[in-house]
Length: 403
Ligand SMILES: Cc1cc2nc3c(=O)[nH]c(=O)nc-3n(C[C@H](O)[C@H](O)[C@H](O)COP(=O)(O)OP(=O)(O)OC[C@H]3O[C@@H](n4cnc5c(N)ncnc54)[C@H](O)[C@@H]3O)c2cc1C
Image (tube, rainbow, N blue to C red; front, side, top):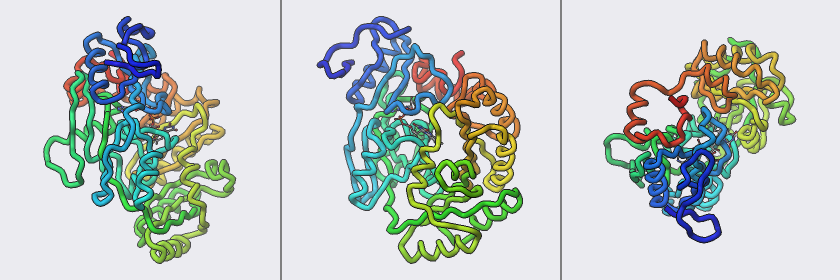
């Protein structure tokens, strides 16, 4: 394969740390064929590859050996097909979410993926990590929004799953398998996604949330059963509110959308449930940027009906950690906990304690804390991985420690 580093074309040569002399990190493929060449070469030489999009979230997941050769797919960029009439869009894996937002906005459409982090995150990485934010409960998870994928598996074979239309053929769903596999089954090179119409009107309300578990559970239930169709509902704690100059108790942020009349009616209903006030739409951007530099983050999940218990159990477990922040997707039953870097020594015991009571998924953690969490080592997952990446060169160690 050829690398493009701005100094003109040249065959790959030289050596990266730990890699055979024929490889130089980073590799910067320009198209799918380049990616396939790179993966085939790496497989032949047994060189581990660290896939990289915009590189904002490479510290998430179990550690990948630093010696792995970086495969930077950010140049696979650009929208190759956009059908506003079908609400579908096809783009290279290196295309950023901001670029997709800009292209679709003109037609009153959007890709409703609002994961935390910067909007310069790439489409390929967002799908690879199944990253999503508060909009996902109402408007679809990455697996629902990805209609088709092209990826290069660990043997260098180009695989296409799904299609470019909403109605699709039945069969083994490679798209759902690859979305959320963190690049361990293949390097995503292109994706077709389903778009939605942007709401005509929107309004975000902060509804004060009671401290007491039973009362909070009642409020969350009332919200679920109310004649509301929010596109996002997120429980945030008082520390998060204070950090945004909005002092008060914990609160449920409710994002109402629809036409103006429907939003006004829903707003009145939210106000009837307790003390509520309107927030600017930028509250959601602040939530997406809630992680301070170097923070450790985990997601703890339970049945949605148990969110109030989980919320308070985590508050108790983290009461002594200054600066710890919680927010929860109440529809999905997921509480996300952000622990500042200064509290690094408490993270491993805390994760061990949380994991003994609920399902815990690590995002950014110190090495010792990963040992407290189960790795993806079940027979089925290992079998699928062996079929797609028999040489174990794609993001090795990310989902399970290296053997
Ligand atoms: C709850 C939650 C919180 C998050 N918090 C943050 C945050 O604080 N900061 C932040 O930057 N992001 C965060 N993210 C992730 C973010 O939303 C994006 O998924 C991420 O930023 C991707 O952008 P990137 O291009 O920089 O990815 P990268 O950092 O380049 O890659 C991320 C991961 O995806 C893999 N990958 C990248 N491209 C591909 C590809 N084409 N094919 C296969 N695998 C690939 C990489 O190997 C890596 O493991 C969060 C996501 C969630 C769900």
